[in-house]
Length: 252
Image (cartoon, rainbow, N blue to C red; front, top):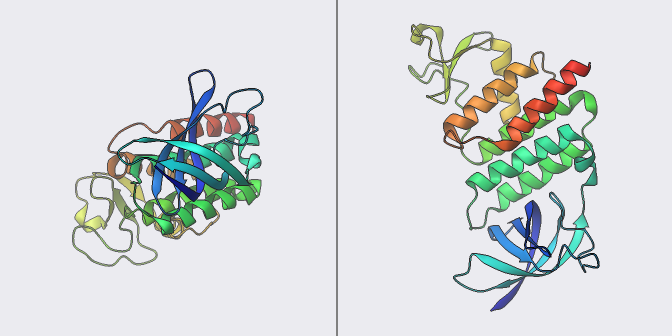
């Protein structure tokens, strides 16, 4: 058995027995790792309530080869990101990123993905309310792009012709990109106006832009994730976000 000190972000926690917790950690150098924090739920736990989702720190992990669940020896908190937990929309956006990472990441070093995920959490935490939805969409699309699932938006997926900036198109979910009008005699996706396609291109690059119809962008994101990232499986965080956004819309 060996002891590792790993830079990590807590993706998920859930209780294990009456006194312990299981954590899913995203580590910079070892990918996603599952650990058990024994005694973490005790009133006088040495962890002191710091083992919460999105907390960033340095974990001491006892590694035993061939074992899926490793033992947590200690955790030094660097950043708690408590603001994410105090705002449902921020929490939902961060949870969506974490769920995508859990569904797609592997037990191998992914430092670029780790750094992007870390920066995305900070961006969501610091965003002002007016730009928050655009920030959530930008961080999610840029994470998808980093994973290698970015949609094709600059050229028609059928004929390969580059689309003009002011050209409307059809977003074909199954093909993972846009078709020009000439190649879309049968409607297999949704209409994508030129402005929406330009905005989507910026979002996939991680750029926050003013959006006119955020509901349409969320719908497109959800269907794209189902087709190309999570293979049709439901994303709990996306459903939670939809409920929060609907509640906010009714309240405004």
